[in-house]
Image 1 (cartoon, protein in one colour):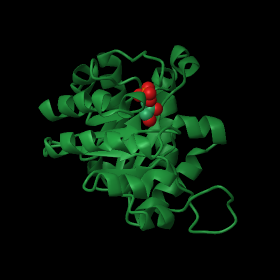
Image 2 (cartoon, protein in one colour):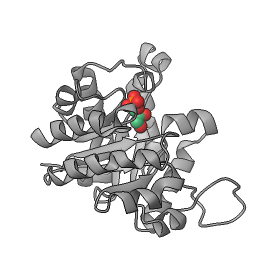
Image 3 (cartoon, rainbow, N blue to C red):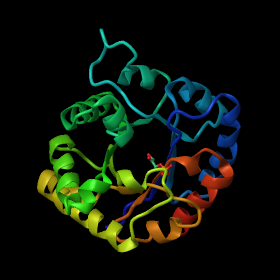
Image 4 (cartoon, rainbow, N blue to C red):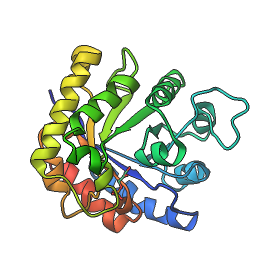
Amino acid sequence: MTRRKLIAGNWKMNGDLASLAELGGIAIAAQNAPGIDVAIAVPATLIAPAIAAAPGLSIGAQDVHWSAKGAHTGCISVAMIAEAKAEFSIIGHSERRADNGETDAQVKSKAEALHAGGLDAILCVGETLDERDAGQAVAVVTGQLAASVPEGAAADWLSIAYEPVWAIGTGRTPTVSDVAAMHEAIRTKLRELIGAEADAMRLLYGGSVTGDNATELLGASDVDGALVGGASLTAAKFVPIVEAGARL
Ligand SMILES: O=C(CO)COP(=O)(O)O
């Protein structure tokens, strides 16, 4: 099964109107790589200006609430990001799980809300260093999937990002064989949860991806793309990752 690669950036709580200039170079790289998908998740305030700055580049959010509207101070709904013309949202990022106590059940509701609103979702899973050291990595990640992937989820709107917490922003990455082993475990679990659709679903790796290690990490078996934090903030750092994805 060939799966179209997806190279997605996550700006986290970074960026301002001036930094949208970076999107120009990224949009050109995306145009030059028609065989893959390129997307950037920006802070919610930058969604509309990012689309204006780089029409044609897929722009998304980093989180949504599961409810349609109401008394949820500080939160943002699927309809709100859709009105701003976002195409997708990241959900379940480990930073939101840690900072905001997000649960797998909430992440599942967010996935369902995005799909109901016609948007795509990138659902993040990943173990902490303590969990890996305790030999629990696969159990933690497959447990997150079991509790957060909606029944009947399909590859045309949901992707999974495996982001080991200890590899995020640290410059440390798992070995290629560790990544491949986890992605195989994820796909096996997805087959159990959603059947044959699992073979079409894109599994992204995230955590300290750079232009230097992208070719190796993206080349691991069952890796269908990357979710990139720090190195997505500038075209100079992100474009080489897009190019690496396009070469594979
Ligand atoms: O959390 C990440 C993307 O969502 C990864 O961040 P870094 O690429 O900065 O390690």
